[in-house]
Amino acid sequence: MTRIENIRCSNCGSPAERHHLEQSLIRTQCAYCDYLMITCSKTGKVIEAYAPGLSLEQLVCR
Image (cartoon, rainbow, N blue to C red; front, top):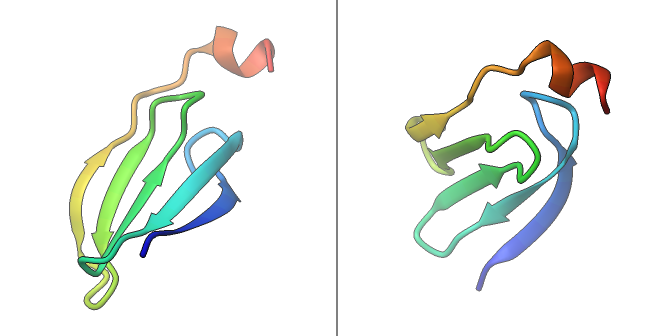
């Protein structure tokens, strides 16, 4: 069973989602800035991460 939390993105502050997956994985994703981080819920280790830089235009136009 997957549980979904609504959170704020740690990269840009926009609304994002944190998915608690069955395989002891947590996937945090933001559709606004394309942020992604997958971690192990048991160890806290990062398995995969992608955090693009934000342009000044993205920050000003929010």
